[in-house]
Structure formats: C-alpha cells, structure tokens
Length: 442
View 1: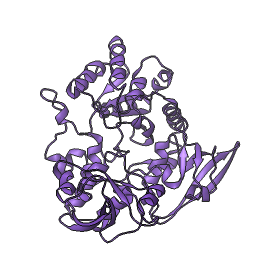
View 2 (view 1 turned 60 degrees about the vertical axis):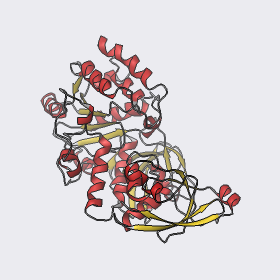
View 3 (view 1 turned 45 degrees about the horizontal axis):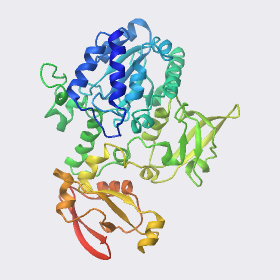
View 4 (view 1 turned 90 degrees about the vertical axis):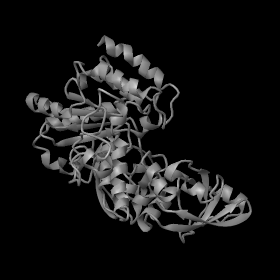
C-alpha cells in the first residue's frame, strides 16, 4: 500500500497539463513502474484476466476488469482515484475480484467488446463469463485531470445489483453479451499478427510489444480495406454517443437526461431533461457506456424501447431511429479516426464552416464547405499535401458530392463508395480562386 501511495502523486503530476492526445514522456518507465507498483497489490490482479475469472468462480464474487493504457495521459485522473486504497470506492471494490489489464494482446475478443478508443474502460462479469455491463467515460478521456468517480460508483453499484439477481436475471442480460467475432484475439488479426505476440516483452522493450486497445479497431477496419470491401457504418461510427440522437446524459448518473435537442429523435420520442433511462432494448443499464453499447449494436433504422423513470413513475418510450441516424455521429476527436483520414482524406483534417463564416465568404448555406484545418506531413497522411492541398483551403465539391456535410459524414461516404487506389476529384476555394485537385484513396 505504501508504494501505491508514493506513486499516485507522480501519476497526478504527470497529467497536470495534458491534452486528449498526450502521452507520458517516459512511456517505458511508466509501464514498468505501474507493474512494479501493482503486480503484488492486495486488491488488484495484474494483467491476468483469466486468473480473475477463475477467482470469481471460486469466490462467487463478480469480476471487474479495468483496461488501462498506461502511456496515455487521458483518464489518468479517474485511474488514480480508482487505485486509491482508501476512498469511498473501496467498500464497493472489495466486493469484486479486481483485475488491471494494461495491454490488449491476449484479450478474448468474444468477451471484451467495448469502445476501443478509450484509454480507461471497465467491464463487469460473472465468473462464468456473463457480461453485467460496461463503464467508459469520454468526459475523462477529454480531460485527464477529471477525477470524479460518481458515475463509476453508480456503475459498481449497478453491477453488484445485477450480480445479486443472477442467474434469475440472465435472460435480461442476453443483449449485453458480445457477438461472434472473426478473430479470437488481437494477435490473430492479420496486420497485428505480423508485429505482436500474446505476451509482453518484459525482458526487452515492453512498450513496442504492447497492443493498445485502439489498435484493435484500427486493425479490424483495415481488414475491410485490404479486402477491397466497403466499410460498414458500425465500424466508421463506432459506439455512437447519445448526442447522435439529440440526447445529452449527465456524466454523474447512470443514464439521466441532462438535455434533449430540439427536433431530435430523442425529443420526438418524448424524452425530457431529468428522465432516467432504466433500460434500453430490454437491457438494464448501469452506465452511459451500457447505453452506447445498445446504440453500437442497433440497426440502421428501427425502434428502441426505453423504460424511463420520470417524477417517480415508470413509463415506456419508443425511440425511433431514422434511416442513416448513425452517420450523424461526430467522430472528429476519436483516435480511431486518424487512420481513416489516412485512407480517404490523405491526412486532411476538415471542419464544416459555420453559417456566419459562410456568409462572410459568400458561400451557400446548403452547400459543401469543408475547411482544411490541418494537412498531414508523413506517410499516408501526407498524400493530400503531395496532391496539392493546403491549410485553409475550402473543399466545395468532393467525389461528385456538393451537399453540405460534416467531416464525419464525408469520411463514411468515401469509405463506403471508394476503394484504395482510386482518385476522386475535389474542387477547392483558395482565397477567391477555384482549383481542381485529385485526392488519392489509400
């Protein structure tokens, strides 16, 4: 315990000025320090989830698996709070078998299905492998200094409640279970099998031997590209946020509506601020991540039935998913979007111009106006630069499309309709000059 208390101030200091994409300066040292501090910890089983499942079966406790990318500074605040031996989380954590996993190499992909773009995520299981739920927070991902644990605490309580009701509630948990996968572990995915093994190289350089969780999604997307297949929407708009349907949830609750956007599917369904969503698609919710799992597995169009508590009374709400709803998701800040930009924008980072700026530039309100805010410099991400694109260009037509759309919508459209090796025509405005360029697909 003393060693853990000594390392926590160092962890907190490390992320004091971090941003979403920051990593620690000494990645190798951070990983080795984490292992030295926690591999013999009384609470945490270190990097061995199979041992955790065995102990959960033996003790009858539920299993908590925290997946943490050590070199990434995002989520360092909540990670440090969860590791504290004496906190308000301790009485809850003591009721679980707790496992800390720091790399994805050996994950059973039929069990561990979560938002791979997060650097701190938690899955809750029964010892027999049944999933109780998930926890993952974009609030903490975007703000490394955020140490709030109210939402995590509610998820712990929710998982314990489901465990107490097990196995009588097993049928209600069916939708939470992972779906069949093509690959057993990440190292079975072709682009990863060439570079990684199941075990970390603790006797050499450990960091280069580690598969980060986001690499799972990257590699799975690449399998479609390598087979010259269109990218499915569910892999472009991975784990769509509730905001995609006009619903903003309070980060400190399980699934309480904080606001509902005017004219959105959520508003049309009758959802209101203050509503607590108890279940969605018949799945009991213990966190916002549970709700986004439902959206991740939802159809391209259809209806999801929600059980809602409002003013102490429960009611059902039918949430209609309009055709193409998933494509409204904002993927601009996801780490998994960077490789997709390499595939179809040649490394360009784009932003839809707002109405006021369009008026200033004399551009149509309904037309395409994607401002180039960044141009990549290396590898696939230099393809647009090499094709003549520059920062501050405005793309007004691309691949025959001229209707207004976001960068996220454009990325999905290009991945669906164009294959590696193609070149698509782009019309750009550079100042007052109209220029035609060819953008390579990769």
